[in-house]
Image (tube, rainbow, N blue to C red; front, top):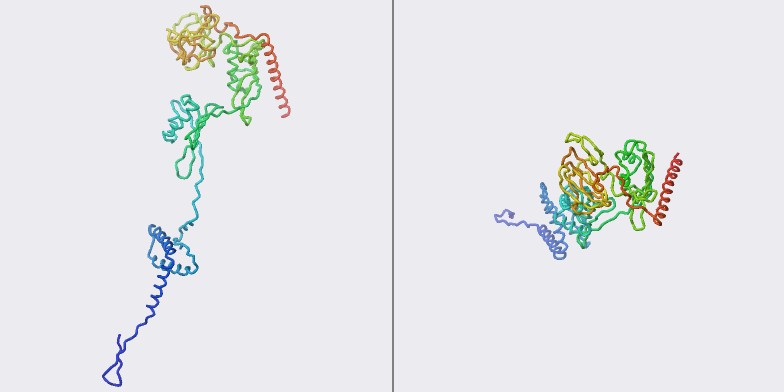
Length: 491
């Protein structure tokens, strides 16, 4: 703007121009000089900080609802912050976290790994199931399941897996990842299992694990009131021990007719225990005595010099005879030997054998060592087997539902071997076994046939048996005294 000043009343005038201040321009030049000097002297440090700031700005801009209107002001404050700290030679990253947000992690810090955890799952093989189906059903890839089974085949045939076998699968879990299979334990019985484990070098490795058990002698006694089974179980005898006794006495005793209330049993047996002293299963019968109708029938377990293990009476004679009286376990004698009224034909006729009523599928044993003369369908007998035994004895088994594997004409069988299963084929009113014994071509009563013992000990072998028998008698008596002493201490 121009200003005019009159001079002493004259018309002429002198004009003056107002001089503008140069301070703002000097200040701006100074700021630009400082900024330019900063960029020229420490461009590397500024660049890294700007990258850090830019990354934070990008994170903030990605959050819905954030207001970035103050970014220009914030950047100016950061430039001032850098200028203030430039002289010290260190530049700290600027924390631009919004209120309530987590501060950024330091560059030297690393996230701690999530700890791994293990979980086990126990499943049982069901009827008609296979190991492959079980593994795939539990989440394993079919290719991995195939590699596991391939490793298993090195020590065990998977086809021998049976219904009820337990399979324990172990998985490793880490964070949100899918569980990783680590090992499998296939329990075959109480003492054997197959272990398949993941191996870094070889994929999977399988090995058989055997559980070692200890044995200890146990004494049990019982009086029979209703049945031998109930008396034995109430006295603490394992089922395995009771079955051994029944097999040993089945050559001389008809358990359907000979056992009466008031009879007594006593037994010395081994029980198998684990490392903690806990019972696992019954072992072997060492000595037993059945008192029935006033007579004692003691038997002793003894191994001969040639390695044969059998039960012998107190005279050293084997309890095993040519034929068993009852070639079936747990059956009821439904019809005896002799004349009877036929349940289907309706008239009386000679019944030339014994009938044992039992559920369909109950195993039938060979009454003695022999050769299969016939196995097939035979008229009113239905499914029929005829065995030839030493000393001109034959046995017949009829009305079976099916034959055991390998039973055919000419096959050899051992006493107690399963040859078939109870059924109701042929002329039959219900599932049962019809059992006959022939001697030299004539029918004999299976319940009263007196066949010779399998073996009688003599000479030096008999002396060894008597010494072993004495040791078992002493052990049985000592367990009685020990039990009495224990009761006395408790009292």
